[in-house]
Image (cartoon, rainbow, N blue to C red; front, side, top):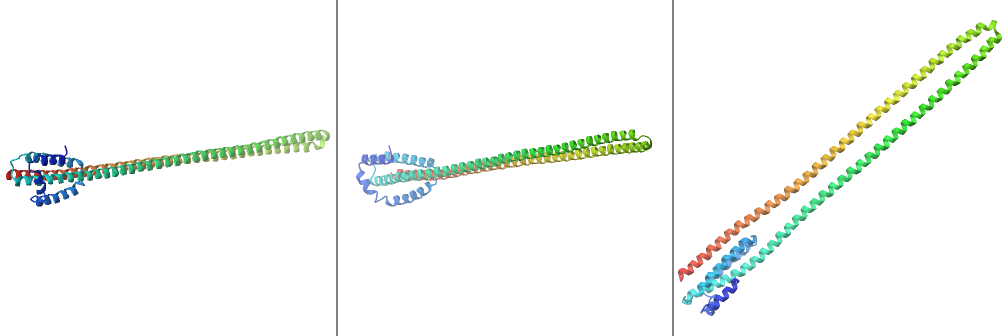
Length: 327
C-alpha cells in the first residue's frame, strides 16, 4: 500500500476527518511552509545521489506515516492534536510527491550516467579500432618493404650473375682466339722450317752456314714466342684473378648490405611493437582512472545521502516526540 493510500484511509477512519482537511491550511501552515523549504533543498541534493539513499528515506517516511496512522485512529484525542496530525499527514503527502519527484530525477541521473558510460565505451572502442588500424597499416608497410627488398635483391643477383657470365664468355672467346693464333704461328713456323730445310738440302754447301744461322734464329724466335705465350698466359691468369677478387669483394659488400638491411628491419619492427604496447598501456591506465573516479564519486554520494537520511530521521523522530508530548 502506498503512502498516499494509507493517509487517505487514516482520514476516513478518523472521526474528525473533514475538520482535519480544513485545518491543513490553518494551524499547521507555518510548519508546512518550513518543511516544504527543507524538502526543496532535499530535492536539489537528491539529484546528485544514487537510488539507495532515496529508498531508505522513503522507507522511513512510510514508517512515520504508519505511526501517524496509528495515532490518528485514537478517537479520544483533542482537536488541537487532530489538527497537528492532519498537518503532519499533509506534510507526509507532500513528502510523497517529493519522493516521486526525487525518483524521477534519480531515473534521469541514472540515464545520464548510462549515456556517459556508453560514450566512454564508444571512445574506448574507437581507440582500440584506431590502434588495430594503425597496426595493420604498419604491418602492410613492413610486408611491402620486405617484398620490394627481396625483389631488388633477386634482380641484383641476376644482374651480377649475367654480368659475370658475360665476362666469362668474353674471356673464353679471347683465349680461343689466342689459341688459334698460336696454332697458326706453329703451322707457319713448321711450314717455314720445311721450306728452309728443303732450301738447305737444295743449296747445300755454301748456304749451310746460313741455314744453321737461320735455324738458330728460328730457335731464338721460337723461344721468344714461347716466352711471349707464357707472359700472355700469366697476364690472363692475373686478370682473371683480379676480376675474381673484385667479384668476391662485391659479393661481400652485398652480403654486408643485406645483413644491415635485415638488422634495420628488425629494429624498426621492435620499435613498432614497443609503441603499440605503450599505446595499449596508456589506454588501460585511462580506463582504470575513469573507473576509480566513478567509484569515488559513488562513495561521496553515498556518504552525503547517509547524512541526509540521518537528519530527516532525526527530524521525524523529534516531530513524533513533540506530538507525543503534546498528547
